[in-house]
Length: 637
Image (cartoon, rainbow, N blue to C red; front, top):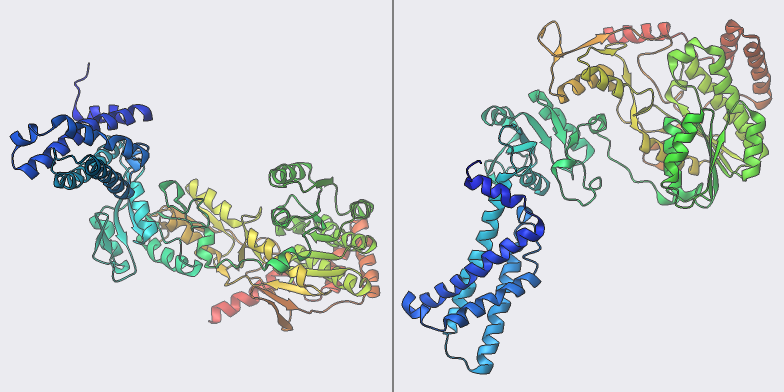
C-alpha cells in the first residue's frame, strides 16, 4: 500500500463526486466558521478565556446560521477548480445577510449577551476565511490535474487583452499547454506582468522565445481585422515556431476563449480579407419564398450555394447533379438544416436538355444557379470533347430550359480562366458566357447573368489541402512554377457574392468579384511551412525540413489569371462586386457557330473543335506563347 502523501490526498479529493465534494466543503465550513466567530469575540473582549465563557453555544449557532445562507447564495454549487472573483461578491453578500439577520434578532429580543460589534468583526474574519479557503483549494486542485511526466507545450500568447488573459488562465489547468509569456503591441501593456506572466513588445519576440523556451505562439486577438491578423501572423512566423490562432468571438459559441478553441492558422488568415456581411435585401431577393434550382449541387461551389440558399428560406430547393454520391451527400447534409424546406434531388446531367426542361416546369423553378462544370484544367485539356460538351452545350441546355420554363433569373458561375484563356477549360467557360449573353438578348422575360471569380479555398482543386498533405508527409511541396500567382477567395464569401450579384442583374451583365490581391503560390507554400514550425530546405539551408520543388506548368496553365477582358467596368453598388459589359456575339450567328462546334464534337475531330473554339473566342492563345511573354516581362523588371 502506497503511503498517503499530501498530493495523493489532494488527488483523491479531486476525484470525489460533486456531492461528496459539497459535503467536504460544508463540513469544513461547519468547523471553521464557529472558530471565526470565537476569534471575533476574543478580539472584541481581549482574551480567549472571556470569549469561551461568553455564550459559547450561541456563538456556534450564529456562525452555523451562515451555512444555509451561503448555500442559497450558490457558494456550494460552484466548481472550485473553475471558481473566479465572483466568489468575493457571493461570500460578501451571504455573510452580510447573516450579520443583518443576527442584528435584527438581537434588537428585537434585546439580547445583550454578545457584543454586537463582534458581529462586524466576524463578518471580516469569515469573509477572509471563505475567500482564501476557496482560492487555496482551487490552486491545489489545479495542480493535482497536471501530469507528472508529460511536458506541456510552452506557449507565448500574442495579445494581452481580455481574450489572451482568459486563455492564459485556461492554460493554468490545461494538460496540453503552458502559458509562459505575453506579446502585445500596446505600449501601456509592455514590460508589465499580467497573470504572473511578463508582457514583451513585438520587437522582443526573439528574446522572449529564448528566455522562456517557447515552443509555439498563439495569436489571441479575436477582435483584430483580417489585415491586422495577417500582419501579426507574418511577424511571428519569422520565429520559425508553430503559430496557432484563437478564432473570432463570432466563431466561438459562448464568446469565452478556451484551450479547445485554439486552431491551426489557416490560409484564409493570410489573405487579409475582412468579411463583408451580405446585404439582406439583395441576399433574399431571388431566394426567399421562391423555388430555386442549383446545377452541380454536389460540387464545391454548388454545395455552398445550397447552404446559403437554405438560410434564406426558399419555398423549395431543387438539387441537380450527375454524380449519385455527390447528390446523396449534399441532400443528406442539407436535411439536417432544411427546417421544413422541401428538397428535390434530381439525378442527371445538364447534357440532358429534356430532363432540365421537365424539372424546371414541373417544380415551377423561379431562380437557377448554374454551377455544373468540368473545371480541372489538365483533365479538360486531355478530354477536349467532353469538356466542351459539358461546359458549352450543358450551359446552352440550361439557358434554353430556363427560357422555356419562364424562369425569372438564371445565373452562370464562371471563372477568371475565361479571360484571355490559354486552355480549353477557360475557353469553354468563355463560350458559356457568350451563350448566356445571347440568351439575355433573345429571352427578355428571363434575367440572365454571369458571375466571374478566381480560385476558392477548400475546393476540390485547391492547392491548400495538397500542400498540407505534402508537409505532413515530409515534403517536397510541388508547385508548377516559382512565379505563378493566383487569386483566392473563401467558398462561403464567393457563394454569398454570387447570390447578391444575381439579385442586382438586369440581363446580360458579367459580374466580377473583388478577389483582393493575387497570391504568389511559392510564397503561400513558404508561409505554410513556417506556420507548421518547419523550415524550407534550400541550397543555402540544406538542413531544412521541407523542399519546394517546381515541377513545370501543366498543359494549358498560365502564370497569372485576369478577371476582366476589357476596361469597360463600372461599380455595381456592392463593395465587392464590379459589373462589366463585354463583347458578345449576335444570337443567330452564335447558333450557327455552335452548330459547327457541335458537329466537330459529334465527329470527335479535336482539331476542328479547337479551330471553332478559337473562332468563338479570338483571344484564346496557346499557354506557352502567353507564358513566354510574361516570363520575358518578369525578367526585364
